[in-house]
Amino acid sequence: MSTELTRCTGIDHEHRHACALGQRSVAFVELITTAALALSTAVAATAVSIGIARADAVDAAAKGQGTSFAIALVMGLLLCGLVALRSVMAVRAQSD
Image (cartoon, rainbow, N blue to C red; front, side, top):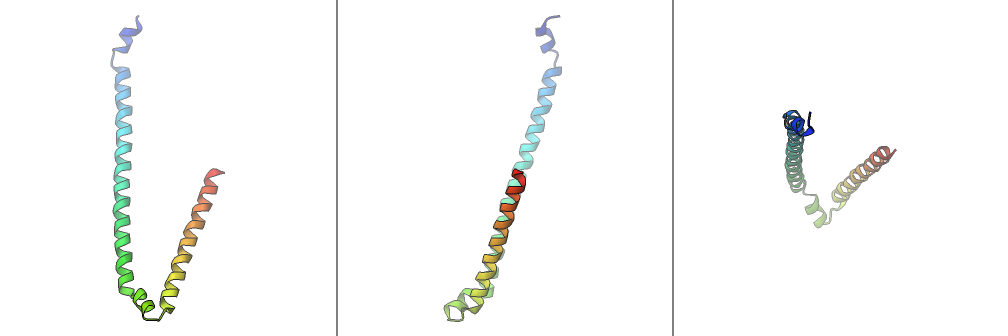
């Protein structure tokens, strides 16, 4: 039996088609996940902006009452430091 005849049976072609569909579905899921992450980031940034506007911490600092602004700044820096530390720990764990 010739190898050309067995290539044209459709069995191998169907297998390649199934793999292509699997790759397409993974790409589609990644696209949806990326879009959801972008939307979530936009919503979080809006919520934080509204929270800052309502807290009047910047306005209080401009009027000479810097205590509330200093506390907010320290808490924000502490949170950023914790996130950075966690990121470094995750990278080290992944490389081990």
